[in-house]
Image 1 (cartoon, rainbow, N blue to C red):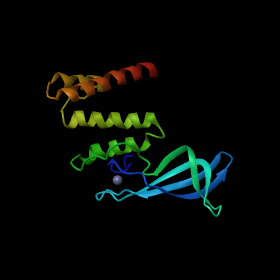
Image 2: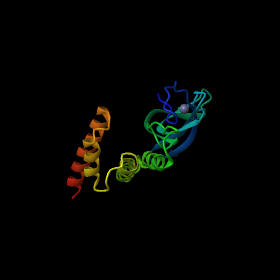
Image 3: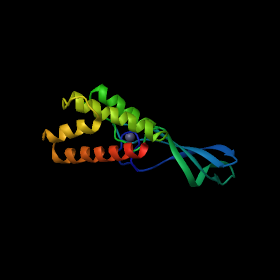
Image 4: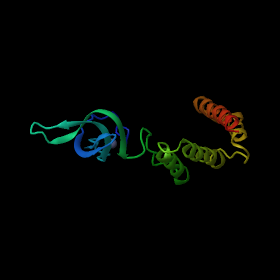
Length: 166
Ligand SMILES: [Zn+2]
């Protein structure tokens, strides 16, 4: 698995604490520290499943996990922003990642603002709607092909979403 903090590939080696049960099932918290020397952060995962017992019949955790979610970090599977990225852009990106599990619309709105800020501050496009701003930066021919293609795909998805949202 990849560490949800630093995205470095790690060997999952979780220990568990049994938390309790409710009408939906049994819960545990699984925990491990990322072994990567530059990370060393604690990873916490809430799990729901069937109860596990020790030899002495103490509850030790859950197995046959049917639901799990990271509680630390809440943000998952997105690489951290490199240190070189300006705070103005990093803040929106980080927040977009953070709210993604709870609201895709909120995450999309933040991602959109992040992209628009980059286009205006770094590519110097004229303020307009996002679709025109993207077209302007593509037409400028300053972007490498892979970025040009990615940003064009975002424009198509964005237009599609806006049309269906009305
Ligand atoms: Zn890590």
